[in-house]
Amino acid sequence: MAAIFFFSCLIFYILSYKRLFYLLLAGLCLFLSLLSKEVAIVLPILILGFDLISRRLISRTNLIKYTILGLIILFYFYVRSRTYLALGDREKARIHAESALRNANTQDIVNEARSILQMK
Image 1 (cartoon, rainbow, N blue to C red):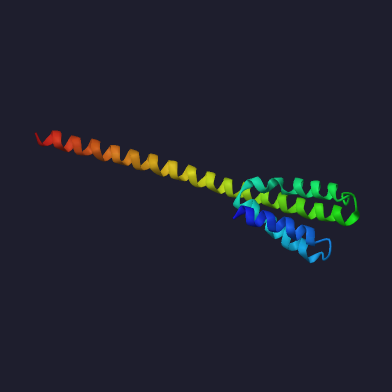
Image 2 (image 1 turned 120 degrees about the horizontal axis):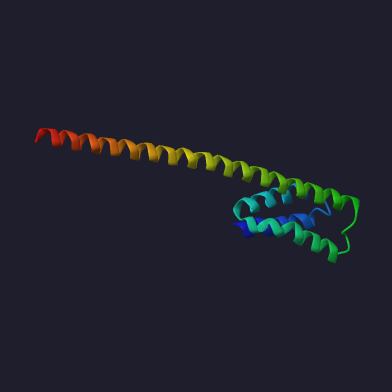
């Protein structure tokens, strides 16, 4: 799935030279590709290489395009960091709940052992 979004982004980026609307689709495909696999982070480098080979590297419209793609990548990093923080909090809560459950089970075993010993 990442490859589909990856190559779609590249195609839409190339088409964005004719119509700027395709840049929005390229950005969307870049974001979806990043969500699928983090390897898609090399796509901006590939785009820079393509522009370098086609001699379109330094122009005002391309600098705007690079800025938009860079903002999308920064937004991806923000979303990803927030996700990991939320997962970290959940993991801490799960560990706390497991230790509380383990302590409760240990106390139940001790109480049952005492009651058995008292019956004898």
